[in-house]
Length: 428
Image (cartoon, rainbow, N blue to C red):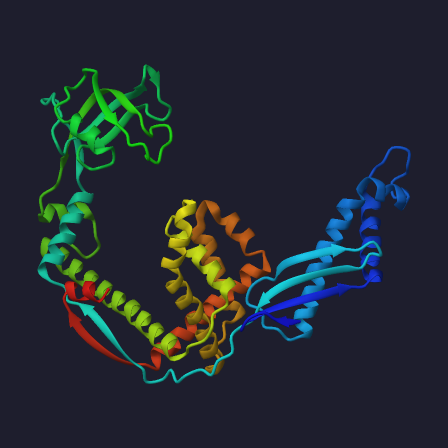
């Protein structure tokens, strides 16, 4: 074992020929029991024949199993607290069946946990104002709005909801992906290119109208990049949004329990907004506590774990395909968050150990049942995911860390401060 960095260890492993041969013997024996070869009874195929037909495949599988098995033994023998799966650097099966390989691992950082009791944390609770309630009621009105066809109108105006068919052409040829029927669009919503929506204003219902849109050379859709596309558009319906008035009848149509009048609804909305403000304040206070703990406990974070966290953060942001020239820029932008998350995890592990925080088998099973129930049609996928030991360990670790954070919060000194919306926004 060689130390390659503060947390990096390179393992150079040699597996003796007799152990490799033992693995080969078992693999060929298992293959013999299930394979059928013409001219031989099942289970009676000579090993030399099996080696000639399947030798390379068997050797590959045996080597893979031995690397995983022996690497685990080396890690255990050296009492390495490995935090990510080993990375295989190279391997060689020598002619005498000696297996030689190198693997790289990173271990858990060791640090003296700084005091985590009595840390002062400010809970910034947003004051619920009358305009917050008014905005919430407007959102409710929008949700309860209905669309009605406006039969008296024949020309499209900004803000109309229109239903139309369109067919796209460039150079006399149809452009894939630019045609559709019964498309519904609120004019001015920005769902379609700005030039398209501008020209849609004034179009006469039931008359096929050409709308020409030039697309930039660097447009993300290669079918459209650099082309000028003519869309033949036929508006079939012009609709208007009918928003209900705020009244007691509106409240009754909502059907909220305990709300029979507009005053009841306003009180309910205020109560809900105040609960949300306290919940947001709790979440932000936890973030501030994490920042304090990370600052108080400086240590090196395993680079492989940071890389994994960067990938997960990018995936969570919906960044599945990043241009090659932007990868490093994205990595540098996300790295501080990733380092903070990784460090916070180790610190919470240390707090859990110090406070003897545990997650029982019953608690773990309850969370699993909840996730399966919430998955709906994808319940089988969730069950399959947690059939892997690694997934269960990850879930257990996450639950322990949640409990450790709750314990750390209990041990803080919290100060509630009522603020307005802009002050929270300024804090970032």
